[in-house]
Image 1 (tube, rainbow, N blue to C red):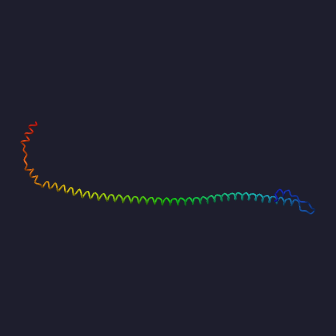
Image 2: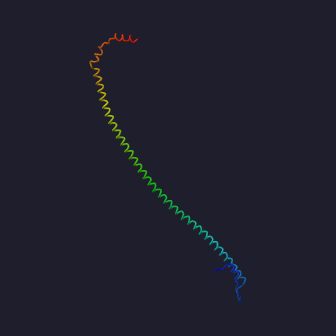
Image 3: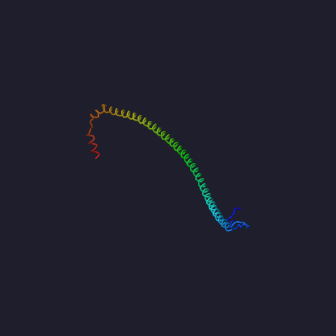
Length: 169
């Protein structure tokens, strides 16, 4: 068990004939007691300071561990976001490719349909042209016939018409 300043103060020495000077011993003990008390006080302060420092170290260690965990979680989250983004980008590209294929196929189908319609219109145009030519030729033949000359030479009896008009009135 360690000595306390009170133990030093209360220490009593036995007396002998040729002993030490009692005042000197008391003075020396008093000095030892003060120094010992100062050392104990300083030791107590240092222990308190060590405890506070240990608490701070523990606190900072906890913060460091938390930060490391947070960094790991953030890295994992970033990696997950990157993976998800890559997956989403692949899906978008696939969807765009499907849409592009569909658009190209639709355009090809429309182009084929329009080409078919153009061919049909060409056929109809040829038929119309042939019919129109035949009609024009028939009309021209009709104009060139002698029937027109006969019609021009035909005389109408207007006297009979005047008589009919008079009767109707």
